[in-house]
Length: 225
Image (cartoon, rainbow, N blue to C red; front, top):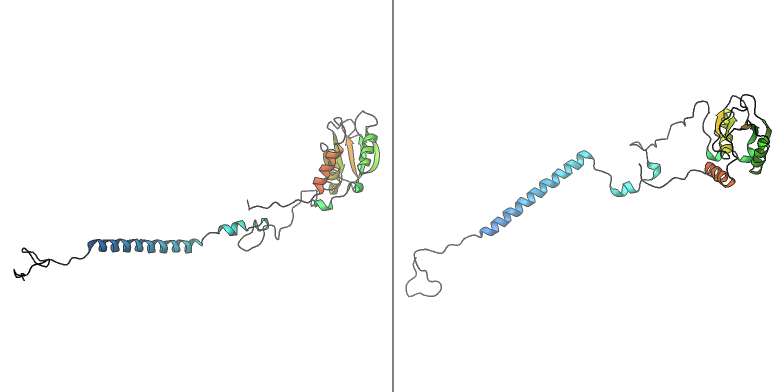
C-alpha cells in the first residue's frame, strides 16, 4: 500500500521497496558458537571421568608427603615387608647380635700373643688394653702355627659365637687386624700380634669406633626410595 502524497514525514515510503524486519544474524552466530564450546566441554569432562574411573586415580601429593619410613615396603594388604620373616644369619656364625647386646670391654677377656721377633711387645700391648678397660688373660708368645707367620698387623681369634660380639669390640682397638672364627668353646678371644703391628689405635679413635658400634641406628626421615 502506497502512502498518499499528502502524507509526508519520516514514515513516507518512497520507491518500490518495502521495509522488512530482519533478525540479528550476529546474535545467532554467537549463540551457536557458545553452544559448540559448551558441548566440547561436556564431552571432555565425561572422557576425563571415564579415564579416572578405569585407572583408579593416583595418590595426591599430601598422602605421599605424609608417608613415613615405617610405611615403606608395604603392599595392598598393609603388611610391612619385614613382617613374618625370620632374620637371616651367616653360615657358621649364628644370628648377628644387636648393638645393645654387645659386651662392654670389661667383659671381654683377651689373650695377647706375640707372633713377632720383637720382645716385650705382648706385655706392652696387654698393659694398654687393660688401661682401656679390657680384661687381660694370658700374655705369651704365639703358638707354633702362628709364630713368625702373621704378616699383617695382627689376627683376632675366637669361637664362632664371638665373631659378632667380643671380636667386634676388640676390633675397635686394632681395625687392621683380621677376625677369624676357630673351633673352640668359651668367650675368651686372642689378639695375635703380627709383623706389621705398629701399636693399637689411638685412644680417641678407638673410643669413637666403640661408640659407633654400640650406638643404635637412627632412622632418617624421608620418602621411600
